[in-house]
Length: 169
Image (cartoon, rainbow, N blue to C red; front, top):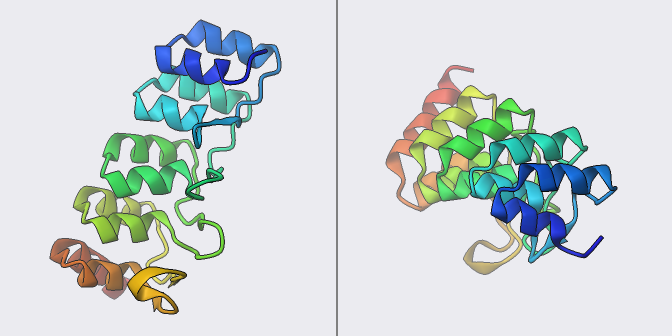
């Protein structure tokens, strides 16, 4: 098989072609341009392809090599609720940390102010006490929760939801 053929077929929305590649032994976790086919399928809304990839043992919690975030973390930060919901329902780990910093989906959604995603992740039992160990930038050396990110970035509704979840514990 050719390098990247799975991604090309995924981009085209060719479900049968993707299934043929997977039956032929193409790695469902192969990365092309810093993304797995699962990430690409969800980004483009090709849910049948995403299901085929998971059936072929694509790792739903695989973090990309370059950015080191899982699809759930990436989509949480963009505010795209549909793929976030799909991933959680397909058993993505809502508390799966990124590499060495422990950055999780709730942190990214809170930092970027995506209220619907924060609400959904909280309902899906995201860890409200998880702490990120900042490694770079203005926060280097600090430890922050999702609530602190939301407050620092001025996302009051995200901070309110997160604080409200804390009081319910």
